[in-house]
Structures are given as structure tokens and as C-alpha cells.
Image (cartoon, rainbow, N blue to C red; front, side):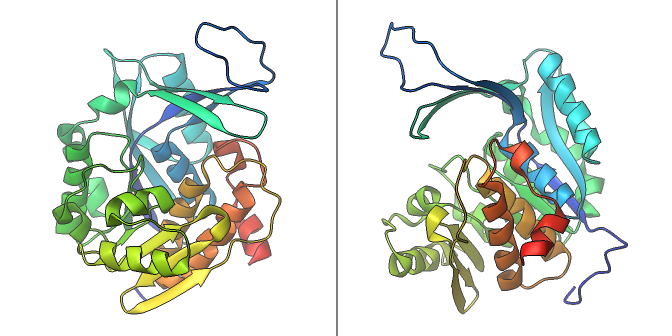
Length: 312
């Protein structure tokens, strides 16, 4: 799959992961325990790393199927509508009648810092059995994309199915993994941690490109050829087999970095599925993420392919 596929046939991308609803309140400062303060703008929007990555992959040219779990409630039903509007297949978005949809309460202060509390709800019940039902779909995909907002054994089962059918898996190891064994890592085509996640995986601190390279080497020795460490304003450091590269962050006005890592992941997966090299895909994903941080929100900030192509 080294040649660029024609754009008439979109590559098949399966995302196994979470969907949440984010409730965001902006305030000048965070309240003290027991204190009530008046906040400013309130925003409710869909989120969840799985859903964010699925929408990014769909807007950037993939034929996307989301495997996820929602509650039988307003938030879940709204999410399904949204995915269908983005041309994402929801055949494997399962409704859990006993648990609510995932939910995140986010408070943002005047300098852009945030407090986030997630009630994962139905995301915690996405099971190995649910994934087995989607085996045929995973087997026929070009790429599987996973993260860690659902049970780890469910993630591992999805990776094993992909592996047994020769499908490449890309992982965004977020939230930061306290336990991610080498067996799982060795079955990945690429792993895309941010600085915090890479520090956890490598066990060293990252403060410049030299330490980023050292961390990439340590992670790679755990069994994965392609390691892409996203460093926010520091750009991205890439190790692909014996090759190394760093792509600086584009010079943009950063408004809101929520979801930028998910955009990077969805963009990278889409480009790999189109037959691009790891370095080409990383450059493209870096551009896509740079567009998303210039806009407020997670999913509403995700760019379309025409927008990214225009700045590449």
C-alpha cells in the first residue's frame, strides 16, 4: 500500500473508543470549596476522544465507522445524530439501557487553565463481546484507531482482531496510561503520545528535542516502530524505524487547544490509510492540529480536508 490511493475510494477507518458530552463553563477564577461564583459563557458540546478522532478522520477524507457505547438518554441520541451528519457509520454504536452517556464537566479560568471531571458512564461498559460483534468490520478496514477512555481489555481485544487480519493500529495513549504492557505496544503500527503520556511511557522527563528523542527510543524499544510525540507549542517529534524528524508547531494564534491531539491522531490515521509515509502523514497531521487550535471547542474546531490542503 505504498501508492497513494485515488480519492474516489475513501479508505476504511474504524475508531474504537469513547463518546462524551462536554459541559464547559468559563469563569474568571475557580471557586473555593463551598463557594458559589458567577461564571461567564456556558457551552455544551459533544466530545470524547473516540468521537473526536472519528470526526477528524471523516472530515479529512476517511470512510469512518465508530464503535462506541452511549446511554439511552438525550445526550446519547444527540451524539448519534451528530455522527450521522458527519457521514460516520453508527452501526456499532451500542445503547446501554442501564448507564448514562459519558459526561465531562469542564471549568475554564481567565488564563485558559481548566478543571475537568469525567463521568464515563456507558463508555466503561463497552465490552470485549461488543468488539467481537464488529470483527468483520475491523477485518475489512485499512486502519484501526484506539485510545484509553474505555476498558483496557476491550482496547486490547480490538488490537488483537486488527492484528490477526493484518490491519494497522494507531493508538493515542490518553488519558495518560499508568499500565500499558509491552504486548499491547508491540502490536501497534504507531503510538501518538503527548509530552505527559510519553513521559509516563518512557519513565523520563521531556524538556527539549534531545529528551524527546531519548523518550521515543525508549518507547520504541517496547516494540513499536513508529513513535510520534506531540509537544503542543513545541511541535511534534517523530521516530519512524531508524529515521528521526521534528516538525515545528505552525505559527498560529492559539485560542483553545482542547482536542488538538485527537485531530492530529485522526489526520495521521487518514493519511497513513491513503498510503502516505509516516513522515508525510506527521507533517499533514501537524498542519491539521494547527488549524484546530485557532478555534474554540473540540469537535467544532476540527478542520476539513480542503482547509488543511490549502495550508500544506
